[in-house]
Length: 182
Ligand SMILES: [Zn+2]
Ligand SMILES: [Zn+2]
Image 1 (cartoon, helix red, strand yellow):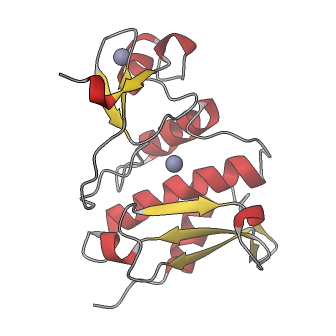
Image 2 (tube, rainbow, N blue to C red):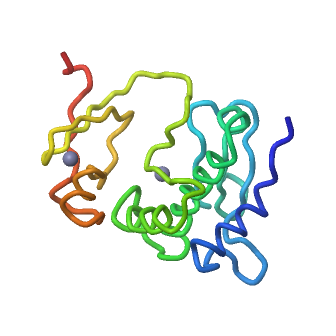
């Protein structure tokens, strides 16, 4: 199976959803590539230049083993998710995980088209590993398994229901060790 080239898709998403901000002239601000066969724990990631040893520039890496047999929408959704991280880092120049800017851009993208939907977590089948944390929404009481604590993560459903789809501090998730789960 041939992997689809990512650069044309990157340019297309950049024009449609990032006002062209992730390209300077003709040069992408972030490089985009497929992983080798070993990246099995996540569908993709963004990493800032300072973490790339011996290389210049930030990069987005998409998992070949996780995504190669999934439909194009999964690839677009994953690439777009990582592009939001790149946009926050390189254009807004902020240090933010899945915080207010992430949510707001994600919601704008999701409501502007129905080819794919960006989610906070990449909800694709990856090899199971046990979650270490349980996140609890103080507003609705729902719980979500997390591998690590994510600062600023809020309950999406409550933000949607009570705050017009915007991130709100009252929906900030609390964390407790998953081992406390009965
Ligand atoms: Zn993310
Ligand atoms: Zn909630």
